[in-house]
Image (cartoon, rainbow, N blue to C red):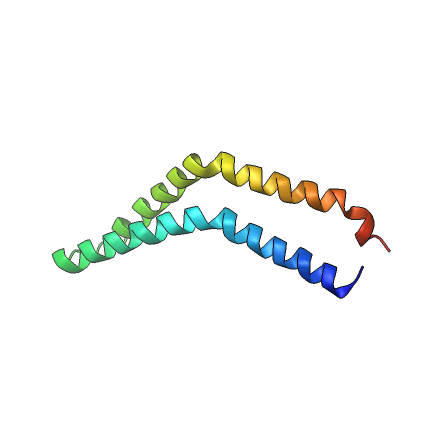
Length: 89
């Protein structure tokens, strides 16, 4: 296996990770930003106020985008398994 093929597989793996983690991280970031603004304006600094909504937002995003995430992961796994003969020395 050449260096170019290894770099291509690594690039595809990183792209897959970013695509799969993106929606959950995006929802968590958005909810965290909204809660941060709310806490700054009301001066309520309760720690559970930040964690619980973020956890709920991440779970909701996984429920919404779960099938799409799973499809991306299955396609990546299928491509890796189909090209496994290239990886074996």
